[in-house]
Length: 256
Image (cartoon, rainbow, N blue to C red; front, side, top):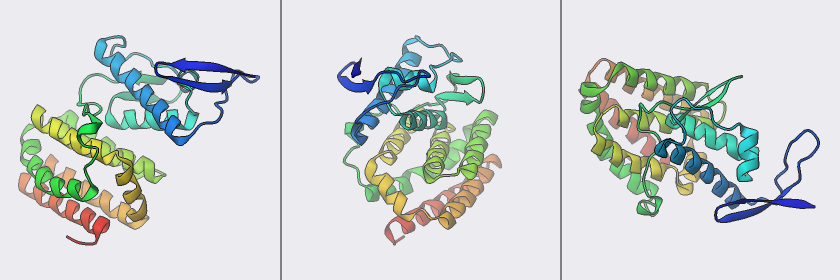
């Protein structure tokens, strides 16, 4: 017989704990898994916002999150990886998972309904007009900590062993570039870009076209952009951003 684990607005069947304390989640659909992972995000971001958790506070373990939110462990790990890439949490092997200091923009705070109908083509059109303009703001305003974060995103993307992991750190780099403008309006606008990039339609498109060879090329282009920004060379960085986005659009849709 199974017991019932309840969270606000959701009741899901789970098995009783097996020997050794592990809980087995039964009969999950992919939709339920995503909903549970989203509740984990909301739990962490809300606790950070309302002060329930202070910066540096230890978060529940993966096993505790599985049990509390009735989510498969792989979904918990994926959500934690996303939060880490966004800079909302830090993870240390053997020590645990911690709420990150409030030094960045964190996860995009955009109502999904406001961008849910944006197509990949519309997104790329907007990015080609918005993101090159970041170069001057970043070259002028970025701090050493911003550049350290950029380098960390580059390194983690280059070490990624799966496309999902690469995509996490690719998105984290673009979010870090927005944060490095230190312009709250610009950051808010680029949050919408990040929100659209998280849509399923975008993910399916990237899955089809990002080959290992293209991924290496994207990594090289990212390195060129960051190197120019660290040199405070806005014009060179702007040219690299345009070239990168044009390359990405050509891969996505077959045209410039």
